[in-house]
Figure 1: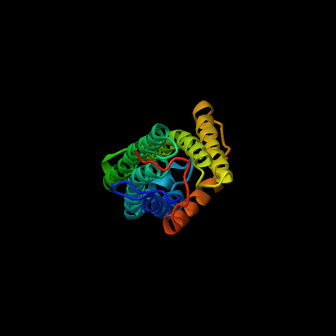
Figure 2: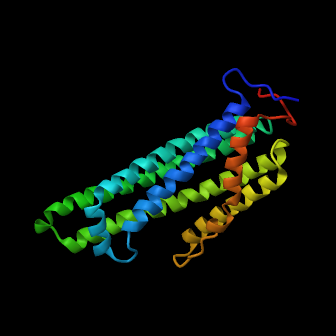
Length: 238
């Protein structure tokens, strides 16, 4: 039995939009974080980090732009996933979507600390009238604030994935094992974020090993966006 579309967009289109947006995010976020920022940031070395940010401020600006695009894409994904899982449970799908929007807002707030980094390294052009060491420390703290803000937002993102995994499991048009893997991915983010909040010495990175569900869900959404949906436990989108 085919799932009918609503007046504005079909589930097939919503799945394809969400899947392609996730794919684009999977490319842009690593470029911004690992390809740019983490190559410039030297943990515990304020002087070298400041110099790297200072000489590569153009790259930092690109990282800011890419992260802003990622945050916008997160909102698009939230909308697409809401439509995809609305037939399963309208209210839970709405809550799941809003949690992703909250995560995107928190990420956007964290990005402002990168703008602060740019302002500080800009001031560095006039180091003759400033205390270089103080400016370097302020720059390092601003970058760490970005990292801390992003880390805290991932707690919300992890809860989003827990609910998303449940919806995937109950959907009837995605495999149950995929829902389980998405829940596992969510648990990785929740444990990591909670651990960093509760302990300054927490250094595990479970999300680096539990993300498989996110990748497979992205692929499955794109596949469903191309192939379409064959059946649903509740075909009504009302």
